[in-house]
Image (cartoon, rainbow, N blue to C red; front, side, top):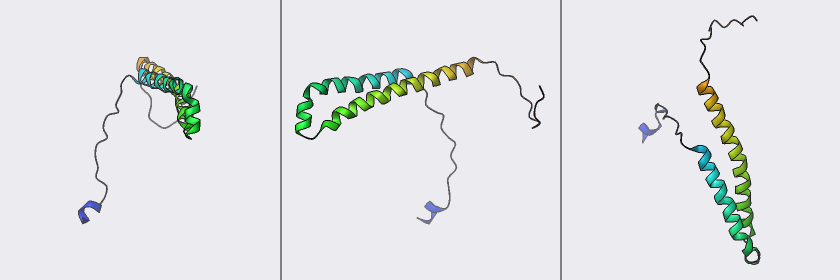
Length: 99
């Protein structure tokens, strides 16, 4: 067991997973709103059993999903702009550039 605590093991960081982020967030948001709408007719039952938080959790998930859609669309656009921008060599002397 002493070998387990000898210090941090250095591993190479894995590549970040990239996929269809925007459609994933949109799909999840649609599911949260659909769950809210499906539960809404049964609000009385949820209220009688003390489970109204289920309904409001779905609404909160949908609302946070809208924020997530806004965020990932901006992130995706910024990544595309950065990939399309030509790279210019920069000076690395540490001195401020004069205009």
